[in-house]
Length: 89
Ligand SMILES: [Zn+2]
Image 1 (cartoon, rainbow, N blue to C red):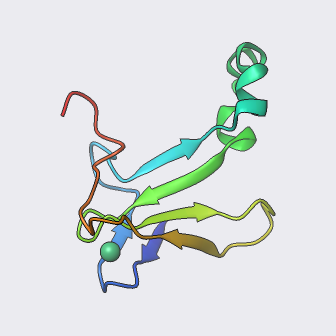
Image 2 (tube, rainbow, N blue to C red; image 1 turned 90 degrees about the vertical axis):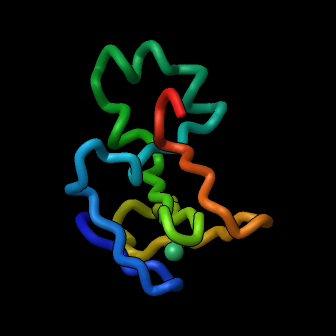
C-alpha cells in the first residue's frame, strides 16, 4: 500500500520501524494449508493485508480482489487502538 489516509485524518505509512501498523489476515481455509504457504513464502500474496491506525484504532483491510487498490475500514467498538501488530505489548 505505501501510504493510506485514515478517515480520522491520520496518515498511515508502512515505512515506520518497527512496522507496527501493517499485518496480514489469514483465513481458516488459508491456515489449513499454512505449512505449504510458509514453505513457498507466498504468505504475503496469499493473505489479506490489514493496517491499523494508531490514532483511532480503525483497521483497513484489502478487498478480496487483489487488483482493487481500495480498502474496507472497520472501527473498534471502544474507539481505541488495539495495537494488534505489536509483539510483547
Ligand atoms: Zn485513524
